[in-house]
Figure 1 (cartoon, rainbow, N blue to C red):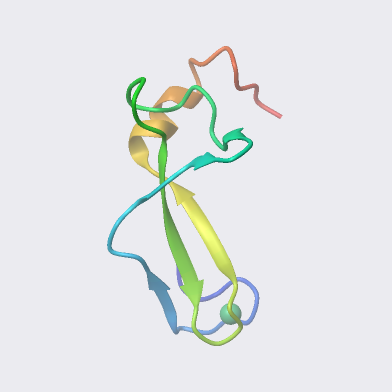
Figure 2: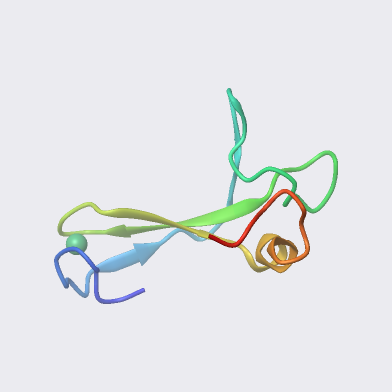
Length: 74
Ligand SMILES: [Zn+2]
């Protein structure tokens, strides 16, 4: 996660809790949720110098990518 890929700062922070991926328009990460009543999770990482925000999808959602028929390798 460090250094920041934009400004090479070492002052990069991650949140201590995951954020859900449900949006007003639907699921940001469709078909990768752990169950029908929850959304796939991701964790925010922010650079304290330039403000670059990155999101990293959690391992449970990542594990579903390769076998999901809703996601294709680009
Ligand atoms: Zn930065």
